[in-house]
Amino acid sequence: SMQFGFAMLEVGSCRSAHRRTVLVKNVLDSAVSAVGFWAVCRAFRLSLVYNENGEAQHHLMMLYWAFCATSVTICSGAMSERAHMLSYLFYAATASSLLFPLFAEGAWGRGGSILSAQFQDSFDGHSYHDFAGSGVVHLTGGTSAFIGTCFLGRRIMRTDEDEAES
Image (cartoon, rainbow, N blue to C red; front, side, top):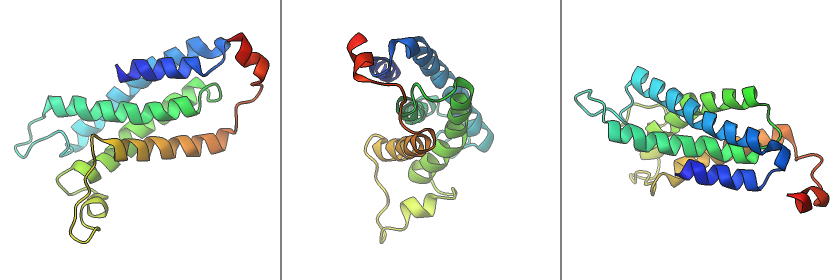
């Protein structure tokens, strides 16, 4: 349901000529992030979704995938109307299979990740605490959106007349 809300927000802020593309991109965004996140969790047996006995906890897989999809969608809204579909889907696959799992495992995993020491041990004995995923989700999504927007630049050909028509 969050993805639907993000799609409606993004459609409302773009020109009418791009609305169908934005909606398709949001559906594909969810599909690509689900496959990418699932594949990485399965291949590397992340402690986010596997318990100590090596059994997958599917409810945690869905929870962290929802966080992952939200993180990827943040960048979608920031780069709407400017990124080509294939290049955006490449970003979505990269973010959902490399960036988000790395940061999520470091923040919420049971250790053993590259970033575990950075998140869990570097605060004078205090571990990192994230409320409902907001830190990791917005760190990965917001940073990716900022970098993507720096590369793409501002929206061109958007004038007050375009806003009055839509």
